[in-house]
Length: 173
Image (cartoon, rainbow, N blue to C red; front, side, top):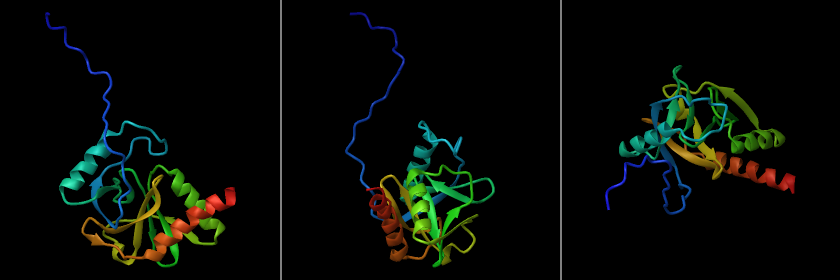
């Protein structure tokens, strides 16, 4: 048989084991990146996968994004939230407000927990904050450090987010 003409790759299918939720606490590298159309959930952002892999090769668990104004925004597949001991702090930046983040905002409000949105910069007082990542897997996995900056370990913050998330399901039943 004569070889056929080169076939253009049309679809790639990859089969792996099911993904598992990391236990944390996580170490996040900081990379300069801004999501395209941050307010729209979409697929095909190859940069996020590349940045995650690069962070892992540098000894981190994942990567947090820093925008052109030096603000932390989100992570590769995660929203970020911080805690100063009194308030949940949501990063002020152009982000995709994920479904889990929206549930937590709604339920934290219902529970009377103070929330605010403000710029979070890695060189400004991260060592005075606790932090988590969240997505459809989980309402909170603790962050141990972002870049070289350690965060406070606060299991109560993670517990608060998990309780607020569960409250959504109790209210909707």
